[in-house]
Length: 366
Ligand SMILES: [Fe+2]
Image (cartoon, rainbow, N blue to C red):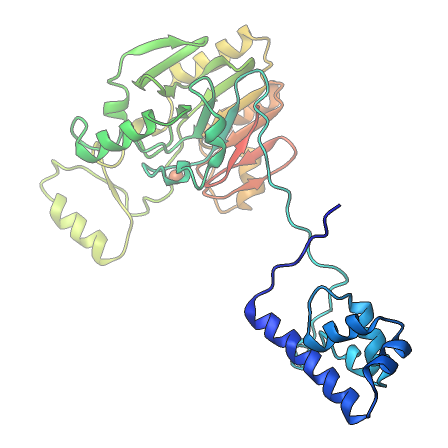
């Protein structure tokens, strides 16, 4: 087998040449002939000649034998020694590592036979997390694979019918190699979202924003990639401490200025807030009926907000429960599910073994 030579930088070669010259000078200072030193070190005269030239292919054992024969073996112990680094470790009270951190294994996605499902949290109309460098798994994806967004999609937001920015952004999403599915959150323009025709898709009702950008409506049970998924979007906004203003209120501008002067957050009805952020009686009834039709058993639940008891676990009393949390709690108590994914609370966290809060993170579930 051919011997592998190590490619050295010129500066390293120069350093080795200096080591060789130092060894030669030490030999001459001691007035030892090359033949005698080679004999004492148990190497050939040619090898000693190479060492004195700093040749890199000579074994470190031969270098060590020569240094030992010259009484300079302590010099070997200084190789790799770094007093300055040791001092810094002592000062910072750092523990010296036993071994270097293992290089993380490169994650290679296994496509498998069937479609894949990924899931993530709120987007608010910004889809940079699906850029190829942030989400490289898409290289293996096709339109048969899915990306689910747990509400606050935000891609249908402008007041009027799609403007330039919104059209461009939705077209970009459509051009992705996967199919985007989303439940709604409390940051969607419901006037426009609900103006799309309702269609049947994979067992439930949807709005198709683009052929492969699809809104999964509330209270539906879809069969996607062989998995039963119950969807229930919507949530109560908790960033409206100043209330909701009506644009046609004669005092609109006065009220808005007062709120802004007092740094209060507010929204404007039909411009940045819609009452449909919370579900209707009919949507909630439909959810119960559809779940019963599937024997109250699904693989996954995807929602924007969470069940009332889960809210306590994630907020510790910080969030006020509303009737949607109570409704989802009933679902939680009566339906068998493997995992429940939700967004809204802008964090990435496994609340327990079954319930997972997502924000920027993208995880594969199938
Ligand atoms: Fe959000």
